[in-house]
Amino acid sequence: MGEAELKNALQREAKAQVGNLWQQAEAAVAIRRKEIEAERLQLRAETDRQLQAQVTVLRNNLLFEAQTRAMGCRLHAEAALEKRLLLMARQILPELVSDDRCALWKALCEELPEADWTTLKVHPADHKLAGRTFPAAAIERDETLGGGLIATNADGMIRIDNSLSCRLMRAWPDLLPKLLGELRKLVNNDETSHTDKTG
Image (cartoon, rainbow, N blue to C red; front, side, top):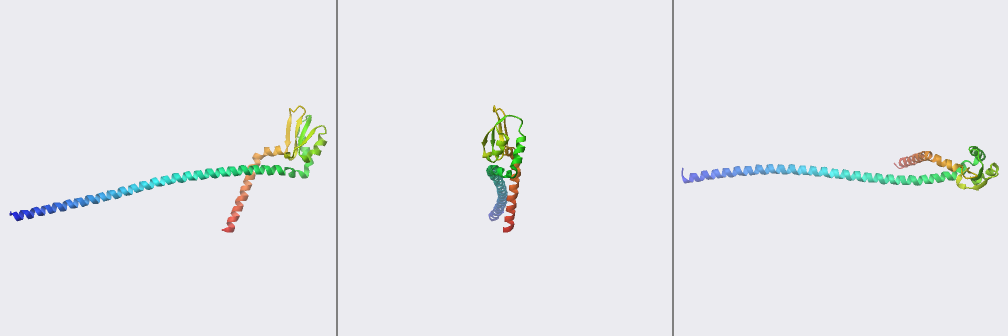
């Protein structure tokens, strides 16, 4: 083998080795690119999961806060409404019994036990009836009673509150939920009606 042939053979071998190395490098680069793309997709998926989890937590926290505030507002509004309803109920008590006040007075007095009633509190509209029924008793007027009477015996040991106001307060825990339920129905019907008209 001559020098020229050796040189050509070495050049061919070097060229083949360089080509082989270049192919291996390109294959390694392609593999690495795929690995990087897979890592990028995995990282993005993980980031999306974390972001979604954070969004869910934030949404749940905001929803809970909104529900808590709404419940607080509702409770506050219902407490204010309860006071207003109770005030209205007390104000209309005398009107409710105005048609048959004498019969109501008689029925309430008959519920009193036998005792020496020396002091009475009555609604002003019942003052004359009280004077006739208990002529020896000291009679005080109290508009807040609505009707009926508060009777106290001579030594003050026995005191019977048989007024409409007292009866209202005893019945109020049962009346209030029914009143609020009826009001909610009225409000819901109004909202439905309003939506139907504008829809």
